[in-house]
Length: 232
Image (cartoon, rainbow, N blue to C red; front, top):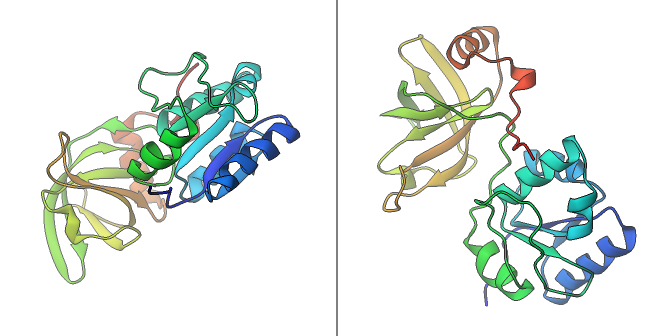
């Protein structure tokens, strides 16, 4: 059976529970990174690639305020397995968003849900619907497209043949309407043929003053208050 291509985030407020959950994953030859809080896991997910989230129900129940919002966000983003106690595979119906991909067993979690997930970094800022004409410059060629959504940290650009790109490639995103050329990195690729728009998810390499001014006008929000988190 296939195994996750990237480590699993293991979150628990209990040192013993974290160790036990990591040991469970290790017994299946699955890599993991242990975190003592959901905010710590969020910081890692903003910078690196992970294949899923393994946590205990007790930690979700005990999380409050910002921690709970982050827990909900991670559970909605990653394939997630929540266990009652170390060594069990039972799923507890804790208040988690309906769209969260949660599993009922460690085997299904590791062999089905995690391998099917396309690893990508967690989005730092909330997406806003925005249709802007774009030109993507890549490997000496230019491709026309348009944005499906836009955020302070990046955008999703619709492209009917996104397979020509590769993850982590550097591109120039041109916004002709505003005369902007933006250095960006491809973070994930949505292939053609699925029941959603194909294209590339990109992050801006830097936020200079011209781009910041355009985003402030388009998004009608302040960057520091526009984090991409669910409300519990």
